[in-house]
Length: 317
Ligand SMILES: [Zn+2]
Image (cartoon, rainbow, N blue to C red):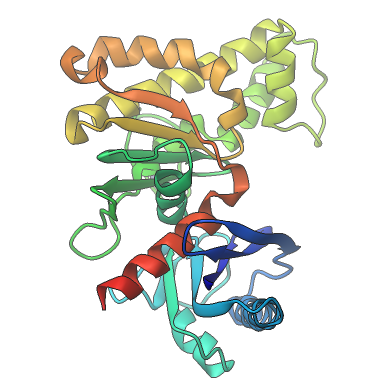
C-alpha cells in the first residue's frame, strides 16, 4: 500500500507515524526534540524520516512522500519557517532545503502544526465531513486552523488562520507575539496556570498547593473536586474562548468547531461560560447550527492531517 511518512514536531517532542492512503495509522512513536536549534532539529527529522522509510520498506509499504507539521509561520511556497517562538533561529529557516541537504529523497510537504491538526480532525476525527471546520489547539499556546470544503484555508500569503492571536481584551496580558490580550495570552494552559498562581499570591484560597510542578491538568482536577478558585479560573478562560469563538462564528459560519490540544480534556470546565458568550455575542441563526466539540485524535491529529495533506497534494499533480 501507498503510505506517507508523517512527522509533527514542537518544542518538546517529535511525533512520528506511517499513514496509509485510507487513513490507517500503521505505527506511531514519539521522541524528545532535544534541541532548540533548527539545524539540530533538522538532523533529527531527517534521521527519523529515513528510519521510517526503512521500516515502511521492510513492511512492503510504498512510501510516496514525507509530511511535516511544524510550529510557526510558513512561507507561501511551504519551505521556510519564518517565526517560531520555541526555537532559536537567526531569521528564517529553510527546512525544505535543510532536509534535502540531509539526503531526504522523498517529496516533502511542510505545513503549520495547527493546520495539519485541523486536517486530521477533518479526515479521521471529530470534524469528519464538515464543510467549514475551525480547529483551535488549546495548549501552551493556542493554534488555529480552518478547513473549507476539504482544503486548508491559508490566506493570500500562506500565513492565515492564526486564530489564537485574535484580541479578546485590549488591555489584557502581553502575548508571545507582541500584542496584548490575545486569546492565547488569556485562555491557554499557560494562562490558566499563570492566573491561578497570581490569585494565590494575592491571597485567594485554594485546596491546591502551588508548586512549580503545578499545571493546567492539576488545576482542572481540583476544579472537578469542587475547588472554587480553580473553577473560576477555567470559567474565565471559557469566557475568553467564547468571546473569540463568537467572532469566528460570525466571520466564518462554520458547521464544526473542534477544540484540541492539552486543554481539550478540560472542555467540560470551559463549556458553560463559553456557551454563554456564544449565545450573547454571535448571531443565533449561526450559533444554533454550529457544533463545538472536543477533538478526537489527541496528539495524533497532526500525524493524520500531515499525511492527508501529502496525499491530497500528490493527487493534484
Ligand atoms: Zn498573540
